[in-house]
Length: 278
Image (cartoon, rainbow, N blue to C red):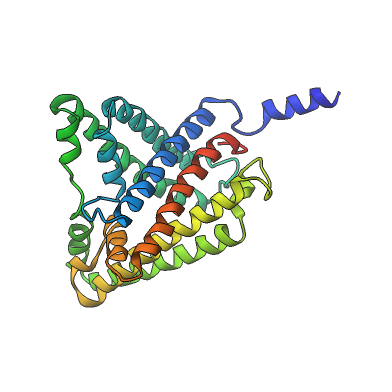
């Protein structure tokens, strides 16, 4: 009788086994792969390769330059579109684990749009790799100035200097919140079918901690851009990690952050397997 009951619960749990469930788990695989690559590129930067682009754009371009990179890009592109579609669907119907309140749906919508941007970048790189070759696609980096251009645009708005500065502080606050919630309190375990004794727990804590450090750096540079009215002070993930590498103590810190970002990528891969529902 107990076996029959457990089977019924498994088949009737929210999101279990339907196409949205598969979409979410496929998307988490893509997210995990992307962060794992970013972490490996950060480690490469720590070893002295200052030309490494450690942004998510750079990770996509790195894939293009690998053996069979065109086929890897297809897989990455599909999974990133799945990730974006999953989160955008969550914005409409809610998530069976993370909630369906208005604030949750707004968060899902923002994430979905961001993931869609990365998916489009992956698609563009994939098309380029198949038409002009893997090496040319990997060298045609579009990264480096997007953050400065966006910041410069906002600075020209009425009150733009305040918007940029407050945005930077908000990003720092968000990073601190995520650090407390996940790196310390392990709230991410509420989404998973594993406990605090699982190997997933320390990997997740390290991953969230590393991501929070990167967000703090990005927020600080954004705040500086607002205070100084200089868009060149704004830096994305790649710029923040390169700035870290330029400090006397930066190599050690970058190694820790790099391993942490790899851990966050592995955590997302584990979540694709152990998530209660998607």
